[in-house]
Image 1 (cartoon, rainbow, N blue to C red):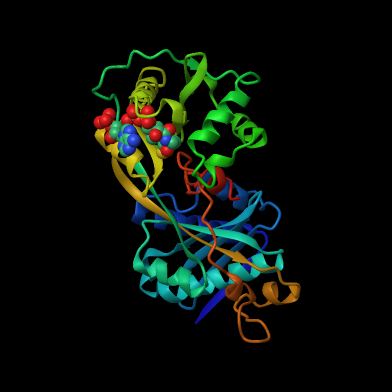
Image 2 (tube, rainbow, N blue to C red; image 1 turned 90 degrees about the vertical axis):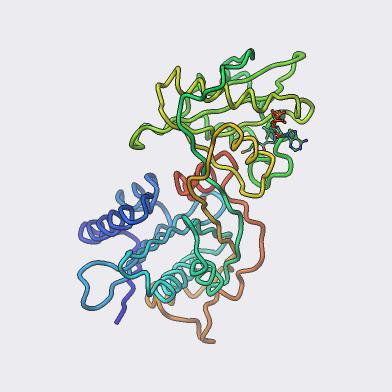
Length: 358
Ligand SMILES: CC(C)(COP(=O)(O)OP(=O)(O)OC[C@H]1O[C@@H](n2cnc3c(N)ncnc32)[C@H](O)[C@@H]1OP(=O)(O)O)[C@@H](O)C(=O)NCCC(=O)NCCS
């Protein structure tokens, strides 16, 4: 028999049990099951609307699954992990946890939801479909070792100057990513949030000017806690007026040299939409290969008012026998993680949107 506990805060026993589950999953997958800042959210008692759903199975002294509900600025993030020894039953454990998570979100007012899955399989597609989430974006994490063989390009670059460069950078970024649902709509608040992140380093945010204009940039990030430390090409873009001139390639090469020569890193990664052939081709030609794929499952959950239901009866259904959230999950643009941003949540923060759980 399986039971599911929906917790607004994990006590020390829960935390220890979930920590072990995450460890086992990480060993099996070679991938962190819940990214660092969401783990901290859990460990430090949970931010507003936090919920941890712990699935137990009789005869086992450890949880068989864990799902975390995290509220972001504009949307909700779900993280789900199933014990590797119980994945044969993933098709029932997963949807049970996810349905309960969707109920929590419905009672908390509903909203846009995304669930990022590391290396999705057809079972994940089924699980997501079972609770009314549809497939959103596929993000590739690509990696390569450093140094890169190519010489550093002869390109004038300077660090981003906080307090001076915001507006021109926003213009170029939004023009280059005009087609992109997330990265294209940045405003000064979005940029300001990133500039205040502890990892932000203006030295690794390189701008190239041409004809008196900002023509392109390469923004790097360092993950010192990764073993071994890992660089990231966080966002790279060239203003549309300067595209196709070799600048994108040069900026990427310059960024890779910076990560090696200035930060001593031996490897780096980036995230890119799997469908963005032009960028994927560029990265492949520079020696990047795919490390893994993350898939977003997305949907919208309607608010429901009967708060008593969801928390008291995590498995429960509405009076009409259906999960309120489920029927209202509809096709909706998958907007969450930004190309160039790590999955904060992607996980790695399946970042940005993904990253901070929004
Ligand atoms: C992706 C991007 C950075 C490339 O910059 P760029 O200056 O246009 O690219 P380059 O001129 O250096 O060309 C790089 C490669 O892109 C490809 N490419 C260039 N122009 C292309 C075009 N019009 N159509 C298809 N592929 C093209 C070529 O394969 C080229 O490789 P090559 O050097 O072997 O010829 C740029 O298009 C951009 O800013 N796009 C919007 C933002 C973005 O998508 N950033 C990456 C997110 S992960």
